[in-house]
Each structure stands twice: as C-alpha cells, then as structure tokens.
Length: 469
Ligand code: SAH
Image (cartoon, rainbow, N blue to C red; front, side):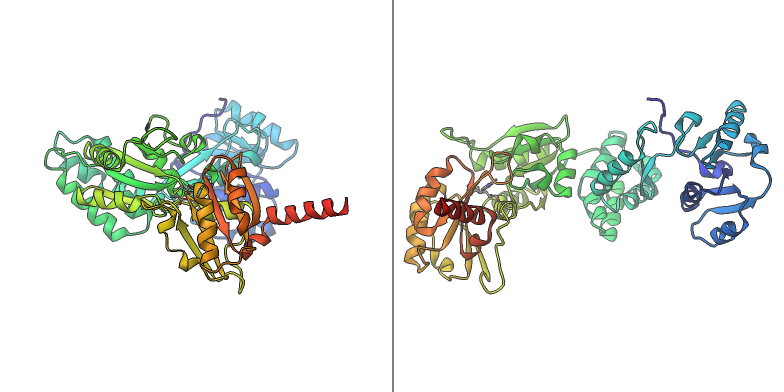
C-alpha cells in the first residue's frame, strides 16, 4: 500500500488550489461542497467570477499572485492542476518544504491523492486504487453506494448524540461495544434506517435508561428471503442481515453462493431436509431460533425465495412472537418471479393473462386435495410450487377444472442457478416434461403467456428448422 487513507480536518487550515483546467474546477467543486476553505491561484478572471457564485458551504478566495511562490507552511494542503510542466516544478518545491501536495492525475508527483468518496453525512467511505485507476475506484464506489443504506449517516448522527449519555448512564456490567452493536444491528438501527426517527430515538433513549440496570441478554431474529438461488437477487436488506448475523439457520434451497455473502465468522447451521434424510423438524427449528435469540444473538433464518410464500415463515414468526422474541421479516424474490424473469416469461399480459395464482401441490393431503378451481380461468397464469413429482395430478386436475389440454406450460428447473433448465410443451404433456426435468427444485408454469417466453420461441424455431429439413 503506498497511500494510506487518512481523513483531513478541513477546519485546520486553508487548501491552496492551483490552475484553471477542468480538473482544477472539479477539485474546487469537491472541496467547496465538502466545506473547505480554498485559496484559488487562478489567472483567469472570468472563470473565477463565475465560480464564486457556484454553490457549496465552503469559502473560496481568489489569489492572482504567482503560484510558483506558494508558501506550503501557510496551507493545510496544496492541490495543483495545471496539467503541464509547471506541475512538476511547483510539486517538487512543496514536497521539499514538507507540505501535503496533490497533483491531479499525477500520483508520481503527489504525497496524497483524493479517494473516490461515498458520502453519508457522518459516515464517509474512501476508496483508493493507489492512483492506478480512478475509473475502477468509481465503479467500486457505485457498488458501495448501492450497499450502504441511504440513512446511514443519520443513524451515525443519532448515535453520536447519545454517546456520552450512555457512557455516563451505563451499569458496569454493560459493554459499550455490545450496546452500540445492538443499536446498529437491532430494532433501533432498523427503525432509523427505515426513516422512523421518532421510534428510533424513543427506543434509543429508553435503551440508555435501561442500561442503568445490569445486563439481561435479548437477541433478534430476521426471517430472510434468499431469493431463488442467484446471489445477485438478494435484496440489499437481506445482504445487510447476512453480514451482521451471529448465526444463520438455512434451508436446502439456499445456495453456497448465497452463504458466501454472509459475515465470515457467522455460524452456519443447516436445518433443511435433504433427499432420503429426515430434517430436524419444524418444532426443533422454532426452538433453536428462540434459544439463539434468547442467548442475545443476532439470528438469521434464511429461506429460499420469500419467507412468506410456501416457506413456513408465517408459522415461525408466530412462534417467535409467542416466545416474546423480536422478529423482522425481510422479503425475497420468490421462485416464480426469479424463474419467469430469467426466461422472459411475463406472468401477466394485458387481456391475455389478468390473474396470477401461486399454488403448492404439496399439502399434507397431497396434490389431490388442492382446490384447482381458482386456476380454471383461461386468463389465469398458474405457478405451481413443489409440483414436480405431482405433475400428472396437476395436469389431470387442471384439465378437469376446464383448462385446455393444449395450454402452453413450462417446467423451470433450478431457476437463476448456473445449471438452470427450462422445458416447454402443452398441458397434456406436463408429466413427460417433469420426468425430463430431472431433479428440482422446479416450478411448473401453466398459461398462454408461456408462449411468449424465450424457451418457447426457441422451440418453435427448432421445429421450423426440423420442418424445413
Ligand atoms: N419460499 C420459496 C418456496 C419454497 S417451496 C419461494 O418463495 O420461492 C419450494 C419450491 O419452490 C420448490 O419445490 C420449487 O417449486 C420452488 N423453487 C424454489 N427455488 C426454485 C428455483 N431456483 N427454481 C425453480 N423452482 C424453485
């Protein structure tokens, strides 16, 4: 590492800026919006006048004296942006005088460089590439921008206001670190990041008051939807919870790529069912969630797709509530949405498909017991979860309910994963497609809109090729 990131106190002095190039104007705007006080060595009167009216909390004074005479000891830092040979001469002198110097786009002449910045008020992230690639730094900044909650700086400011109060109030048994971790990771942080300021502040004030008594552990459980498999389909909030978790209880549907996004030292506990092995059972899962939360841990219950769609998230939430454990639900992209998007299958389409039904073929009484009448309307797109092994029954019951045996169908297997597969055909062929699909997870989609999907178009053009041959 040649350049160590440090943060400069802008109130410690004035920054000298030299030059009139577009790069200099850029830096002027950056320094000004950061609130710096700038002495601008500029020899272009017009541009200068124009810029003085530009916004920003910082102050700018123009100095028309020769930049080559700058006395480094008068400035907190010097930034030079002539973009020609003059840069070298001034930079050499200022470095020799022991001043902080940045020459724009010339890390070789600089002893400090400007990072790309993610600005969330009190929270500032600096990104550097040792001067090698500002473009790469900007790309990384965009990714971090997307990752950091918009209200992070406000949360930091809220915590700043209560810092001293907590330090004075707390009982000796209360750890500073744990208290603030719980604020950030728990309901107070969640409320603040959601913009519910009054709730966040009231809860924080109460937590500070409560901290006068000795510690009693209390954790929190997040029921998190992991999406259909592709880690890029995690929501930003799901990612935050994974990165803050102490322990993650996950299902069979959760892929390794998603688990790889979790905090590195989070404990990962598999509680799903694998083929041929009994799972630990729902009661045991509920018990373990409650135990972990009661031990003061930040618990994530990670489920494929969305926790509230055929995921038993509803039951878990009720059990947690009954046990008095705080629980939050983080939605995920359900399999039908992920799989349909992947193959360009619009689940609704103007008059052609005006209803969408999510059905599971896996009730405790089997697919026979499902009420298929809601799926009888020809304008309804039907997405069947857990239907692969019941494909024969699904076909029979839909046809009995009045669906045309020629209705287009798709079997979308391991959707959004690297080994995803899509098979298309007609409703009366559904069981054959299901056999050809191999092992799941798989979603059955029945409806006219299937004919608009990419696999259907591809199969049509294959048939055309075969007919032509
Ligand atoms: N809560 C999950 C569904 C759990 S039920 C969700 O919202 O998606 C499990 C069923 O979901 C599987 O049997 C299958 O029908 C469907 N499923 C889950 N992930 C899938 C994937 N990647 N591709 C196709 N179907 C999937």
